[in-house]
Every structure is written in structure tokens, then in C-alpha cells.
Length: 388
Image (tube, rainbow, N blue to C red; front, side, top):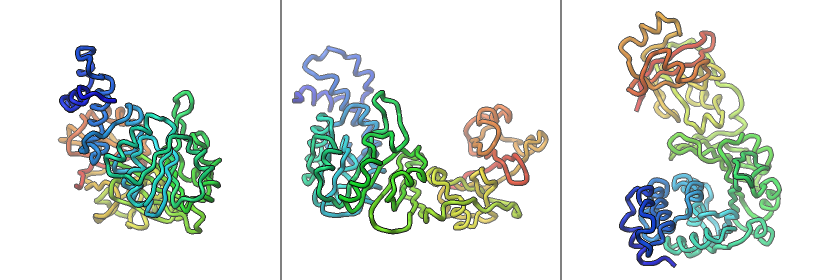
């Protein structure tokens, strides 16, 4: 039971530095300082990670690790979008319950299963505060619950990606529970299965290992890969690939994603394009070049150019001001008057730090330099301005 003094302390200090508050020690014995600091830190984190929760009074936040590991609102909303709707959905590894809370809005009845009693108590209270009274929290083992299940419209599973020693794991078979051992039963007992995995995984290998997969979603937030979502079912359909960055989705047939991009330097390029992180991860460069009529600089550079602007490109666009080789004299002319630059290296034999030292440029400014390899022309620098 949280005392009134502790609740008052949380409200009074909700915007203050937790590290400074921790120095209060035992100066206020009527306050459960450990719990209060946990809640203040959680609320501050939620303002950016879970903004719609942060504005709800009395939401309870879990310990730091669970708060760090839970989905963001952006990724949870995307999962809700692709989960669709139905009568019954089960989250077999609920944790803090963020994904279930957002996905649940499309389902009449929801069960979340979590082994840690503390998280069950927290999520149960939060669901009530959020008005999600159709969610039932089961404190137990998700695999055991699966064995007793008859049928669900959707099964969701987010296996733990750390071993018993706390070390991070990335292979599907190394996660807990092992989805490879459960997938056939999950498929038999549901219309659809959604599996959340590390974005570090090779999605092609994950698809091959799990089987039954019909959709692959590589989800990025602010151009940083956050999740790999696989949707599996018995329904026969071509495998689709979705590369997501915030609200933008690039979709293609997964078979089409294989193969190299179009490489030709017959044009004098005026525009340079850098694909979003999720597209980089997917490796669907041939589709990208064909769909937007772009030329790749080289097989492994993963940068594209055109002579005319492509306004709907899924990534960053840059106006090319100058192109130079690494020749000392050419560099001097091309970089004349430039003191600062944002440098990116792709398929290039130097690191950003090494190149910055070589060019004697500070970081920042409005100039963007892409150092890369161009087919038939070797190592080159593209001096650009970003297109907003």
C-alpha cells in the first residue's frame, strides 16, 4: 500500500532530477523513497516513450529494466494497426503490458500472461486506470497457458532476448521461450501469430527458421531500427515485406527484395538519396531503384542518385553541390570555404573520425559529405545540402 506521503512526494517532485532526489536518503522516513524515485523516473521516461500514459494520473511504472525494455507508444500503435480486430487475443509474454494495451483496442476480450507477480499487479491496475476492463491478467507461464488454450484470433509473443546470465541473445532458438518449439502449436491454436524479435536478426533466416511467416515488418522510429515483427498463419499468401519508419511504410513482395540495385553512371547526378534504416536492414535495394527510377552508386554503397528530384523517396534527400575524388588538389577545391560538415561513410576504407581528421573539418553545419565507392570510379566524396 502506497502511503499518502509517498504519493505527495511523487507529485511534488515529478519534474526533478532523480539523482538529486536520491541524496535525500532517510530525511523523510514516511516516504518510500525507492518506490517514489522509481515512479518519478518512470513518469519522466513515459513523457517521450508513452506520452498518452504519462498524462494519466496514477499510472504505475515498473522497475527501470522493465521500463527500458517495454515497447514505445509508436511501435505499439503500429502493432495494433497490423493486428487488426477480433473476438479474442492472447499476449503470452506480457511484461509491463504496453503492447497488449494498444493491441487490445481491436479485440473484445484479451488475456495477458506474465510470470512476474509485480508486473501482473502493475499492469492489472494500469489497465483499469486506462479503461481497458476487457483485459484479464493471468500470472503464470505463457507456454503452460498456451497448452491449455483452445483457440484465439491472435497470439502475440515477445520472447526474452537475454540468457540466464543476462547476456543479450539474438537467434530465435536462443530466446526464451523458444518460438521454434512452439510455433506449430501456436499456428494450430490461432488465426494469426505475431512474433516480436530483435532488429539485429537476419529476417530471412528468421523466416526460414520459424516457417508459416506471411508478413515481415521491420519497424524503425526516427530512423533507428527497433523491432522485427513476423506475422505467421496457415493462410497461403506471398511473403510481404514492410519497412517502417514512424508513419511511413515501404512495402514490397519479399521475393522481389532479393537482387542488386541498378548500377549505371551514365548520368550526371543532381540528387543523392539515403534509404531509411528499416530499408537498409531489409536489403530491398533492387526494388527501391526500380520503383523510384534511381541509380545505385555501387553494389555495396547503398546510396542512390538521380538527375531529377524524387520527392516521395523513403529516406533522406540531398542536393549534390560537388563530387570529388580523394585527390588532394581536387579536395582542396571542392571543400573550399567549408569548415564544418556532417560526414557519412558507406563502403569506404576510412572511418568517420579518420576522414574528418584527414579533411580537417569540424562536426555539424549545413554541409553533408558522403564518402563512398562509385562503380568504375573508385572512392569519391559527395558534398551535399539536405532537402527538408
